[in-house]
Amino acid sequence: MSARDVIRAYYEAFNRQDVEAFLALLADDVAHDVNQGERRTGKAAFREFLEHMNRCYRERLTDMVIMENDDGTRGAAEFVVNGTYLATDEGLPEAKGQTYVLPAGAFFEIRDGKVARITNTYNLNDWIAQVRA
Image 1 (tube, rainbow, N blue to C red):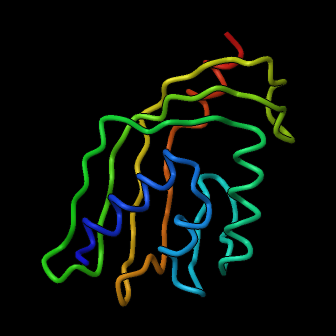
Image 2: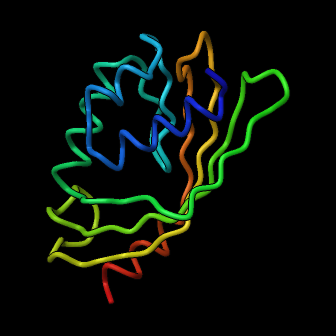
Image 3: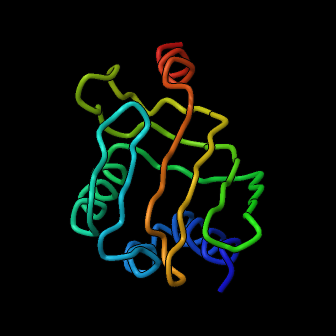
């Protein structure tokens, strides 16, 4: 499976909220660099992150563009996050069902057909402004 195929499957599982399919695409020692946060390592930490996100947010990613390097060990995706803020996330504005549309991206390291590292990026200040509006 190419890096592009792995990344596409990763985001298809995300959009279905299929946690098990999502986790199956990760290396056991996956490194997850959360936007404006600390690195989380391993599938258990990633599962906790997903459960938290699914509790606080409902998101669907659209307008996906996926890129990969020549040897298939790295990839990137650019997309639009279409979301609803469901439950207040600690340190962030109060959730009242606000919707948001946010450009975002991610960088991947692929090892043996699995995601070994993912680094997410988006403009947190833009998101805050949208949910406060």
